[in-house]
Length: 227
Image: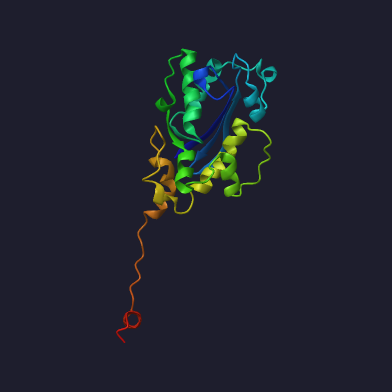
């Protein structure tokens, strides 16, 4: 199972208002193990970065002015995510921006779901921790993931952090949730395939002997007051 943990940084909050992607960061996992293979690219958005966004990621237009346009890296990005499952936090944000960028290239590359499935870790977090804060920062603290130095957001760094959060959230008995948790507009049932395979093994049944059965019956009689 090949999964790509993905994050983006943008010039603002909505592509519908003309905002653009300025960084893509991806890390690859195969069978729930990080391979060390990554995709990371800064992108010239051909517009100003809003001050509010700049305060989050610190990536300014002076830094971006000589970076490639999205159209120049689009095919390489699509090749990297092809035949995988994308894992993203608040996936509709990242996928919405990326689909908009793909459309603007006019290269007929299609949409993200032409290449891969998408799994939203925010949906999973809300199922596991209802009524609690489920931002990436909150989940990092909740799962005690403390070995990253992070003053500002960055797409590759956040993807690396999200990979650790995802592995923590989907370890153990989270397969109990696998039938309930799906991405808003994608198929997420394969996200826990690795852990669910462990739970499908044959169970060992240990039968009670006669002495244990008698003791059990005596205890039931005592509890019900029949002795």
